[in-house]
Structure formats: C-alpha cells, structure tokens
Image 1: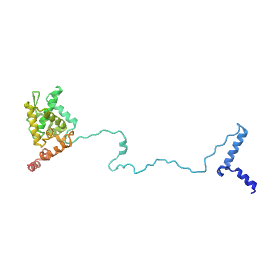
Image 2 (image 1 turned 60 degrees about the vertical axis):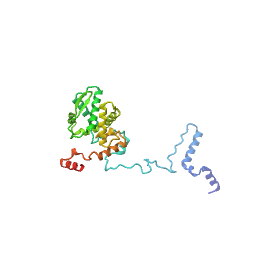
Image 3 (image 1 turned 90 degrees about the vertical axis):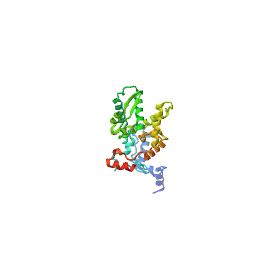
Image 4 (image 1 turned 120 degrees about the vertical axis):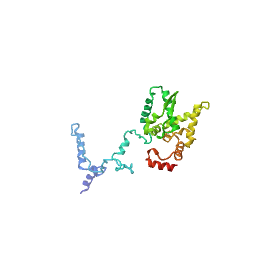
Length: 272
C-alpha cells in the first residue's frame, strides 16, 4: 500500500479507535451529512441496533439472604406454618386449672347459692355480707367432704344453714373455694384489720382466724389460713413458700377423698 493510501485510512479512523469506525457508524455519519446538506426533507437517521460488544449482566430473579436465618419449624410436631402464624394478628388464649373451677362456672354456682336462699335480688351490701360470711366459714372450717356441715352463717341478724350449700357444691366444694382463693384472702385481711377489742364478735372472729393460722404454721400470714390458699395468684413469693411449707408439715400430701378404702386406710396409718 502506498503512503498516500495509508494516510487516507488514518483520516477515516475515529479519534477513539476502530470501535467507532465500522461500516454501520460510517453509514450513520453519511446519513447525518446528507441530512444537513439536504435540509429538513431528508430521511431520518437510522437508530443503531442492539450492541454487539461489551459486558452484559443478567438481573438476579430472586434476592438471596445472608447468614443462617431463622430456625426452621419441626415438621414432625406441627402440620402448619408456624412462621406465618406469628406474622398474623395474635389470638387470645387461656386454659382452666384442674384443681379449681373455671371463673364462669364458679360464678354460676355462687349465684345458685344466692338463689337457693332467695337473696339474689337483695341489696348488694347484703349479698356481699353473705359472701364474706361464706368465705370466713370456709377459712375456719375448711372444705373437706367428710365434714357434716353443721355450721351456720349469720348475716344482718339472719341465719343461714351451711349444709344445703355443702350439698349443692357436692364434690366440687374444694374446687369452688379455690376459684375464690384471692377473695377469701382479702376477706381475712379485712377481718384482721377491723379488729376491735371492745367488740366480742370481732375478738372471736380474729381469735378463730389466728387459731387456724397457727395450726397450719401460717401465723405470719393469718390471711392465708384457709386450706384453699395455695390457689391464690395475687400473693408474694414469700407467702407462697410459707403455704408450701405448711402443706408439707400439716396437710397430708395424699388426697384421701379420691383414694380407695384400702389405700385410704394405709395412707392414714402412714400419716399417723
């Protein structure tokens, strides 16, 4: 090739190299030149096609996490998606304890007691005094099914026999009073707080309450002298420890009512 030919080839090259000196680019430049010379009536500049050169990257179809992530559920135990369940709106739940009646069932029974004596439509103060007398009677006499139920409740000058209440409660007597354990403890506190040495009834009630508390080893917490106090939920840790200690020392650990006659006699012999 002659020197003049090489100079012509150099002039045709772009200042950015051979990348922009291909036939497609030269055609586009020629069309632009013709458009400038021919005016507004010339043909438009053709759009370049897709690039045939350069690095092309694919967009990832899914976002990848990092780390080990949450602990997966055990499919052997759960047949549903526990992770999704925790993302939904929480649903309230509860359960009833076997050693006491449900609050609704206990309230129904207490209302039946009121109806049995015809006091359900009396003034609230009278009904409340009746309940307080019932709580105090349970504290000093207990809720054993073996007791004959010869006690009476005196409310506002009226006397009510306890035996019909024992018959109505039946085998649920202990579970009934366990449902009202905190209310019974509050009633015992009120009795101790209202102590009046010039009132013989107050002296007698407080003395009986202290007697039961000492017999159970609860002289420090006489308001917990009732045998259903272990069902209280609004007590301190020290009070609960004292109740547990009292049960181990005073109250037999075996429920003799639910035992067979032979097993019951042997259990009584071991306790004696």
